[in-house]
Image 1 (cartoon, rainbow, N blue to C red):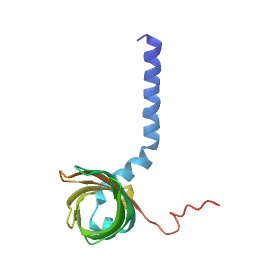
Image 2: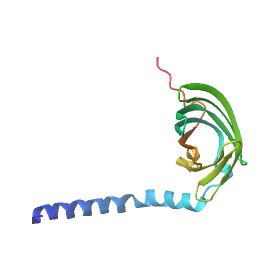
Image 3: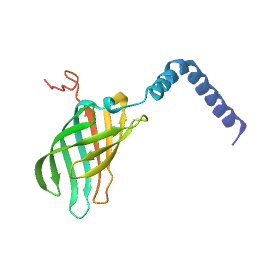
Length: 154
């Protein structure tokens, strides 16, 4: 590496450091506040849309869309339309959930066992995965907010 290139990299690094220092008061306190507050079962409350993608081992691919409601006290119900290897059906799932202070948790789905999840975006989104050897799947939940999820094309 010649000297001018090294100097350019040093200048870019110094500029990035100055930008970080300039904005650190507005960014870092927000991150620290989230870590201090943590999460609880109340962090997961209300209506969420869901999208499931994955595979049921031995049966084939699975996709599903639906809606779930979390009561903020550790119980949920979800209605979804699923497609497993071309077979489409509707189902309702119920269960319980626990949330750790670090915003991770376990949802215990009746008849399907435990699933690990993480609450992100201040409770507006949840990412979940199955904890069993029969399926490899993820579910993404997005909070339904009245008036904010309307996407009408004129």
